[in-house]
Length: 81
Image 1 (spheres, helix red, strand yellow):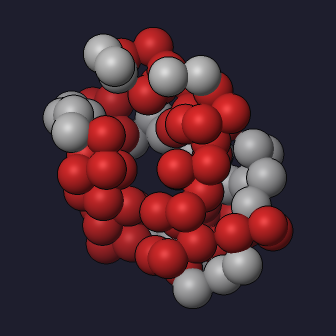
Image 2 (cartoon, helix red, strand yellow):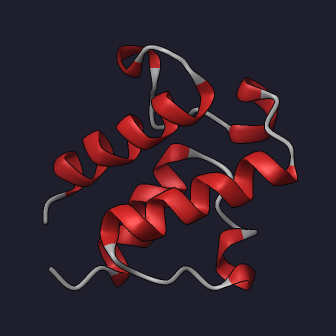
């Protein structure tokens, strides 16, 4: 799966979770600074991503995912499809 496809799928998850227009989501978007995400929001995003990509994201790794690009790069490196 290429990064553009991953980005589009990640953006769809984030748009739904935060009720924002998917076209406004950029790679540099920071969950805490730009979306005011709290720990519950982040847990829900990670759970949605795990379901979307049928993969487990360990808590230690999830804590490092601060931006959309971080998520895309993580999934690109760890997703086997």
